[in-house]
Length: 205
Image (cartoon, rainbow, N blue to C red; front, side):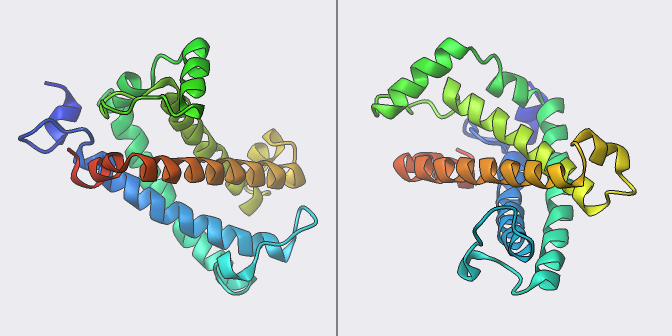
């Protein structure tokens, strides 16, 4: 029996063990708070010629947004470390996300665009899902590291230098956030199109 199976609830075959479901929903809350507060922080010093509407920004003003952002940051980091550690220890990442073949990604992407991609077996990720999930994990790491480089550019000067300096780190942080938002849009759309996948993330079966 694998470590993941031991962590999962006993009884019927589990699609998502309890630790996956808990960290998933905690991550969802933390990311939404960070995105909303991040948009408010962005509005205080825009990188581009636009601002985010106040209706979708969180915090009301720069100081309030920073407080929300830091609170969600620690939740995201701690929860993310738990998720990454268990994903590696249980072997879930290796089983679920590897291998990824470019030819399969292209074939599954074509099938998805023509609404011919099957979703009968929720225990198996298609190549597009593997790519998206692996990509959003990478973006999560980049957004945290670039955020640290922006937050403490002197204390983490080596990290800030690695990103090309404070100003470039802000752009990296922004585009990593944009990639995560794009993932969320696709993720939610798929949950609506395949509702049993949402049920599985709630019940585990």
